[in-house]
Amino acid sequence: MSEAVRWTPEAEARLKEIPFFVRPAARKKIENFAREAGIQEITPEVYEQAKQKFGS
Image (tube, rainbow, N blue to C red; front, side, top):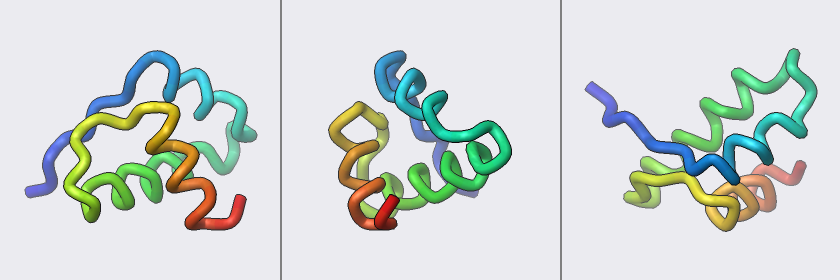
């Protein structure tokens, strides 16, 4: 079972900048990135790290 990853309100706001039709996939990728890094809370900084990793 995969652990739930929390999103800060600021990171959620950043996610809303992504077009709605790719948002679910982006959320999943960012959450997987965080889990692999042992991160349990997605902050704007984690969001940016994931974004850079995926080149978006």
